[in-house]
Length: 225
Image (cartoon, rainbow, N blue to C red; front, side, top):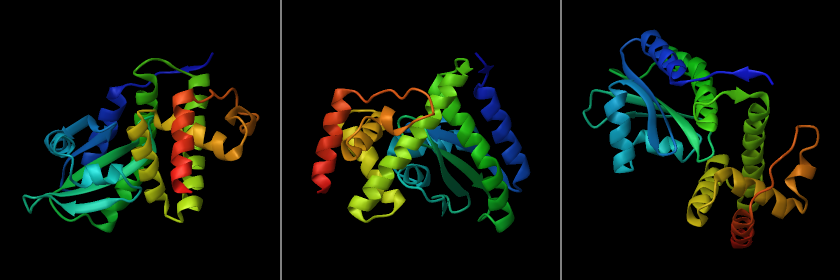
């Protein structure tokens, strides 16, 4: 079985590259699952403060799909918070702190590095620092696809945008204490009327959602009706 090794040192290298590439950058970090995962410079302090207080651009970016650019309370530091790929509990968020309001060139560099950081974060979280097998990579991609499908169902039912649909998914998974991936798969089953394994041909085995997730999906869908 093919294997690929990922670790926190990859995130550190990417973050250091980003800080060097953006003029006036004082720090950068990656958060996931309502916590700071890796951070360098001022991000080590600012990211933790925002998660502990439950508010701030990093927290706000985690509940939506839009990049946020905000001035910090000190009136000097600016933060750019970019939501990225989903882990099982929610999206990763890249935070970049600068001593000026980011310019177009700054944002371009951030946009170039963010997909690499988001992918590395998702892989590391998914495998918990273990060796990533090819079948695990397939499962990670399947999870992302299921979340996208569930979001699409909610967009149609609620007539809302993608960010609002994702917030509904997150709130429901937290309320019913089920994993975001499991709730998404269950929603796809409930609405589609067939097991997710039958709806994902040719991409390998798909794990069926557990019964608690199925109950949560049925109640969530009924509430939307």
